[in-house]
Length: 74
Image 1 (cartoon, rainbow, N blue to C red):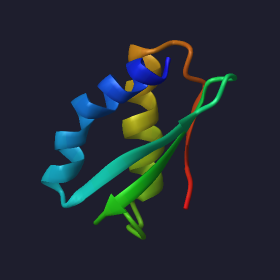
Image 2 (image 1 turned 180 degrees about the vertical axis):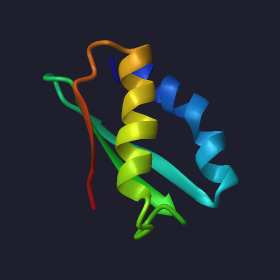
Image 3 (image 1 turned 90 degrees about the horizontal axis):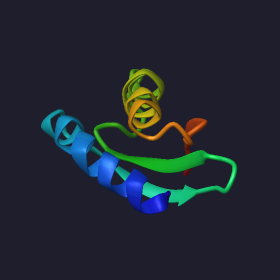
């Protein structure tokens, strides 16, 4: 599943980079939790939680039904 998540993140990455941000995949747990680290302009941005849940999480769950949640670490 980690490879599927990596591929999906690479599809959404240009949208984040267009706004000066980025995302790194940290871990995919066995129970479907994807842990990412927001980078660049996404770090500390007041909209980062919305980007994480309504953008990244929604996209990953649509592409990979096994994904249960996306959380930001570090």
